[in-house]
Amino acid sequence: MLNKNKVVVGMSGGVDSTVAAYQLKKMGYEVIGVNMRLWQDDFLEEEHFMKDGGCCSLSSVEDARRVCEQIGIPFFALDFKGVFKETVVDYFIDAYKNGETPNPCIACNKYVKFEALLEKAHQLGAYYVATGHYAKISYDDSIERYVVQKASAIEKDQTYALYNLTQEQLQHILMPLSEFSSKEEVRQIAAKFDVQMSQKSDSQEICFVPDQDYVGFLKRNGDFKIESGDFFSTEGEILGKHEGIVNYTIGQRKGLGITFGKPMYVVDIDPEYNRVVLGENNTVFKSELWAKDVNFIQMASIKGPYRCEAKIRYSAKPAPCTIEYHDGIVHVIFDEPQRAVTPGQAVVFYQDEYLVGGGTIIRK
Image 1 (spheres, one colour):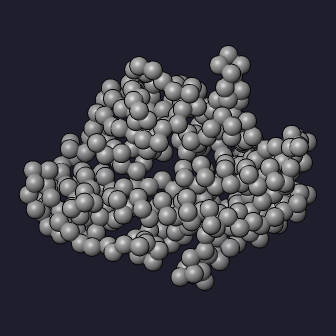
Image 2 (image 1 turned 60 degrees about the vertical axis):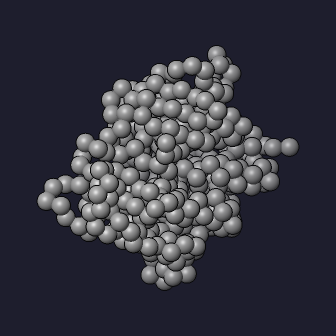
Image 3 (image 1 turned 90 degrees about the vertical axis):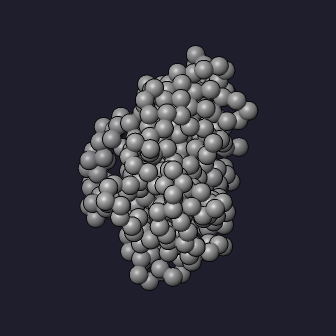
């Protein structure tokens, strides 16, 4: 029997998860802090993983242990390395191998934080799992479904990375930072009991690549050889040599290693023939895209053309569009062309402040 007053909080040792645990205890919940051991790269162990490298750093365990003691809640450090490698790291490597740009945070949320951790929470008798995400979860009686809304601290809103949540998961998730108006407000609460932790910087983008050299990470952990190939123009002309498709992403201009006397951008990546296609800025814009692995939150599916807004990357502004859903694939037609539509990234749909759903952008 699961206890609805009991909640497991994923503790990274950072500001957000710490304040989430603190707020939940203050609200009367029986709180358990869990630090998830996710990855260890022996090559970087001494230089980087002893430092503040985000949720995968060794220092995060001790930080999480310390703040749990200060809050007055039990603490566990649990090994999630197996599921993290299988669902996040292997996916990350395969995406680059296939000429895509992955989003590991979305995969981690789907398979680790809100699947594996939720399963562990249930084993501990807890009904809920909680994180330091900035998003609002509520139940809408009119449609009889759980819904997700943008956070009050709109500049910190993380709904883009949460589109994969299912109705079953949503009923077991708490996000106590949803009503805070700013990150500074959260830091002020953290400073009341741990000044050192309250001043920590936000987590880096790829927690398991603390030196930010993802190509080096691929060389150490990938099962494929990174080979040079040809740059092509959009007209099919060979322009020069590239250093391997993993070094490039759609829309990239800097770091091409070759000059043309005018700005040139990555327009396409062709893994089959090991080609990188370059073009001028206008060739980077597209009016439509297709996405797979689609999940809808506000409805089980959609029928016919559906008007909404969509983001093609975390930092993008939502853009008006029409979407059509056929056989597991979403076709998105934008009112205005969007820059650098990138296979492997997520396209996420919104109705005003509500998260509708999303999917993974594919080539078409």
